[in-house]
Length: 334
Image 1 (cartoon, one colour):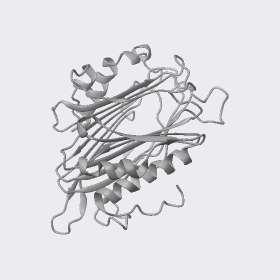
Image 2 (cartoon, rainbow, N blue to C red):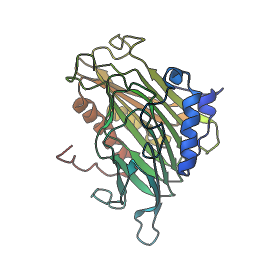
Image 3 (cartoon, rainbow, N blue to C red):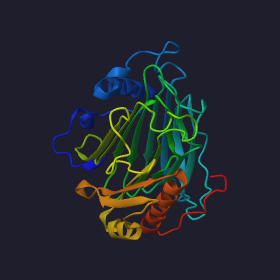
Image 4 (tube, rainbow, N blue to C red):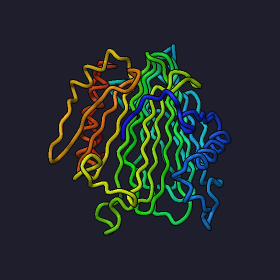
């Protein structure tokens, strides 16, 4: 699972989805489902509601802009379709009082077979925004079809954006596709993180690494239709390989993946600050992405608490290096 330099993009990395409206996002998700070979075995429709039907095609578009009168970032525009929902921007981060903070909500509380979700976030020049989720994303057991989420993030000059969702929990027999597209100039910063849990550890004897498929693709570019800076893609199919092998997951069960796209002047502080090590309890390290796009930080651990704690250390380093401020205290309920 490595980021690679792209000189001859494949069909997926060359594909350019339009998520500026709900209809465009729905069409992009349909196209993506037919584009990927790993989804070929899962094209059968659910016997209940059809895939992507009303109520199963969630869409959320958020536009953040800096208010020149106050210097504060505002949620200037929003479009939403159930089951995805957001209400308004809050300003609970005392260290960054100008940063707009939005929590995304899913009205169903989970992801099931046939669900199609799209999240489009745009951050204007000099704006600062944080988007988080209300809780872990639980991808339920599946017998037919699959579920997918398309994410597009656009950050403009000198913008700053954080998207650090709660863990993704893949229940047994789940099939889940996630495609993330990022566009930002060299002056902007984007911090994107994900924590993958391979099932509900103590729920069922076949639960741990019992999911059928997890396919993830992250692509970044400087321009909306420009050549990719890098592509990180991995396809996880526990039925086809042993994840307990050395060089894969080894003795660990939880995987954390963080991408910090930021100007090159911050690289040394971030990489030296977080270091790299492998112990019986935790393994982590950071590397520079192709074309000096940013840093890729990975963590392996036995529990979500351990992995998220190490990710929070890296998150704090990014805040300190880029904004010159500290992370606020963790909420007690998290």
